Image (cartoon, rainbow, N blue to C red; front, side, top):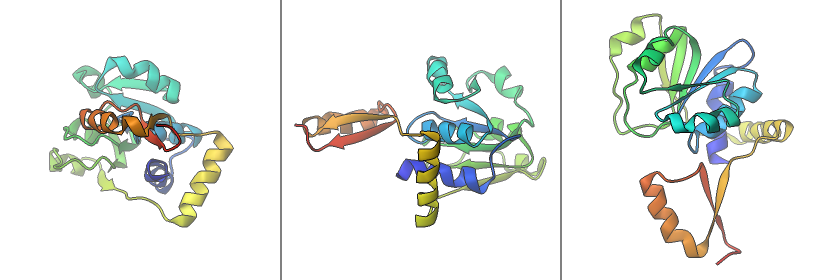
Length: 189
């Protein structure tokens, strides 16, 4: 529920949908759901990833396009293209290429909340661009999200972990080796 409403709420608030181009930075626990939601809302979805090896998975999740963010030329080609960018990456990264990718009056919403933001503030003035964030939604919006998930067959991609694997799961979590979401199965040892 948490990853779902955390990504659904800003996509809904900033009215993503048909005719909108939405970028999703990161395709992990939050990002994979953001891609599914934005696609189901009717937006043109572009996934940003640091790794070419994640291209096929991002496309399978519903992205129309995948941009490898380490490719400077590919990033430059995104200038003034996006109506909304949802940043789900928790680690510190340079926001400048993404701010430059926003259209006039567009928003970059950070959900990953790194320890520190790295960007050039003057870039926000080039087209009244907005940098924002979002927390989880309320009860009404969570119900709406669950109905939307049911209507569009959206589920989180999970990996079941037995109680005997809990220490290994924590180690993998610290290494960033989680395939979207861990779910603890209390019925398995």
